[in-house]
Length: 396
Image (cartoon, rainbow, N blue to C red; front, top):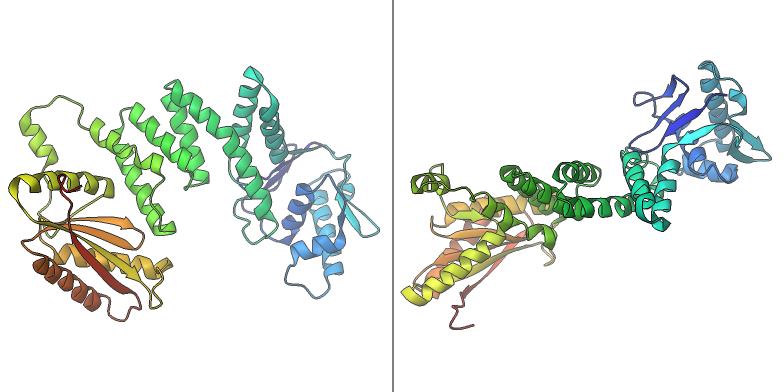
């Protein structure tokens, strides 16, 4: 039999020589699930019961016959493709199954694992080559898309950890060497595989800054921030957040005249409601307003609006997302143009407002609460709030 090439990374495909047996359009079904399992654990014997439990975790009418039928179909598929000795591809003896070790088999996941493991012990150029080969082989997660197979998850997680082990030192080297193009490619590939790879996000931003692509860096930062809040209810990793001001600062490092500066920093659309910003910007504005309050005597207050379910626990999922969108809409419509709003956590917004007295501030807070209840009528999510004066530098 010719070399059988099996791709398990980024999807599943099987080819023999120049003949494709299974590709993206034909890989579904138990027929290929059987082959995937046998390839994954091909260096040991597999009892029939183990295969049956893996393929039919919820049971089937006659698992023994169903398994035999699948084995026959795999052999027939290879035979119909003109493959010699197809009947010897899967061996079975006394209820024990395994792939024929005499078959010339190339599996990308095995090649990747070998390179990654070599990188753990090698030094110098040998280690560098092993890291690069492993990263090149890892085109995607193990059997990406085969989410219904419970046995895939631990294998996928193990190999993804190996990929991270290989990709991170390469990104660190590329960053140190200002190799921005290759860093952008590798970090981008890592994020395609895992959108929540914080290290890859950090280095992608570093690469964009190194290439003077600040607008793209800011766009990516905002997309990433929305993803973390929407899917996980979390802030961005601290190291990623630390790049925010680098992005903003570098966007204004070109000498231009004052008219251009005014045009650049002015709001382009007609202003309605409060000013909404990223929390890192809010912190800086808070410090500026606190300093100004010492000089002018202006009273400034900070309000925290928090969402909770009927039991007092933070809401989650779609319920949280709908309520947070409703709260932001309520804040922008209820507050004045000079008030500043930022999302503090997955279930909280913080507001800075100028008002003469605490009582006036509480009236504003009450207006927000009433409008939220009206906007989110029927929701089980509740809104609570607190209000305190800001601390001026002399008081801290």
